[in-house]
Amino acid sequence: MMSTMNTMKPRKIIVHQNSRTKVALFLIVLVSAYSKRVGAFMSSACPRNPTSRYAKEDTGDDMFLDDLTPPQLDFARDSILFGENPSTKKNNGVLMLWKGTKSILPKVVTGAWKDSVGEENPVGALYNVAFVRIPVILAFAVYLRNELEGRPLLVDLGYGQLAMSPLVIVGFMVIFLGPILNEK
Image 1 (cartoon, helix red, strand yellow):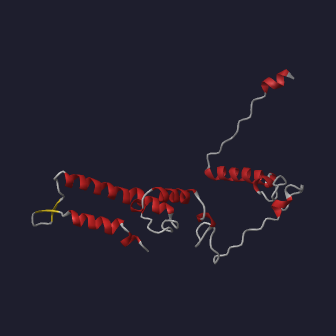
Image 2 (cartoon, rainbow, N blue to C red):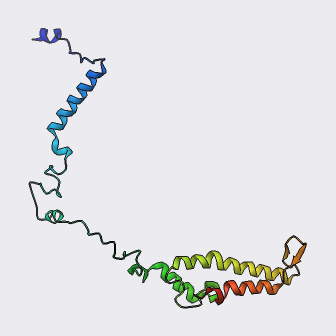
Image 3 (cartoon, one colour):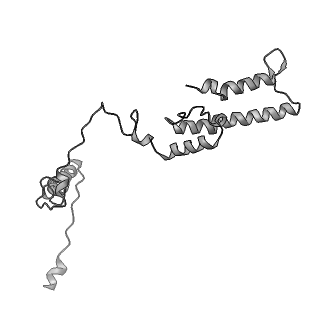
């Protein structure tokens, strides 16, 4: 017996150089693998899938998953988040921050000359305070300091330098930051 094992030569796998033969061999392997394991590729036929309507073993825990229906689409109804008056607008963190800011800072800084200002869009109101109103007020404070030190604001409109009157600047501040333009 030993002599027959030593004389046996190992088989060589023949690799064909022809591309058509390679494609045919690949398709044969693919079809044979698919035909043996159909359940692995099709989840609805797989008995391990608990949400399958065709599962062979239904347990009481998984039965509720079979009866789920897709939600009904109602385009006429307002959204919970984006409707006219969604419930998420009534009491959220940003709105509470805006109400706290509005109660602490003066009306000139917040622009809340009425109680309902900023309640519809508290993020926009906070943005307005941080990036519009406070920088304008700080620029006005720098202008006042320079004016009091004797360095007026000089403007050149093409006819030579002109010192801007403090009344014009105060008028702009009252118009832009006061209740005149901010009432709706």
